[in-house]
Length: 153
Image (cartoon, rainbow, N blue to C red):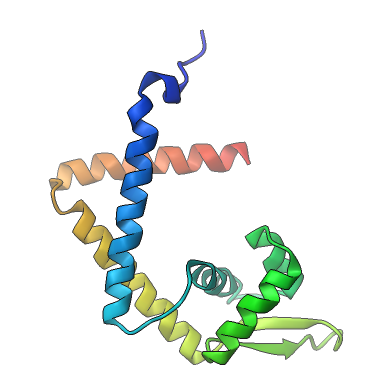
């Protein structure tokens, strides 16, 4: 017997998840404003993706486009904006000078550190009404959902 469709089991669950996500984004944005960080969500995501490559070869524009699931032109616009903020830089690939790779600058790494702090502060604010035990249960449930989604991809 298959498990019931979660959307039909509790139609309010999807709406609650959307509302919580929006609330988290607003709280994170407030914390970022207090740090005087002005980045779009797409720019923030691009910084996180570039940072993911820190122990290996920096990504190419095409790698970033694939990870962001956007056209290469959109990545060019994001990189241009982040380069203007001194958060990333374009560097030629030593093996093929026609290939351009994107790496974080010290400013980009500092910005990411501050963004992570803003995200933690926002989560702390959102989760404040929960007891430690409730936070542990929620963390376990979220891990199950994340792991389940990753297994289907």
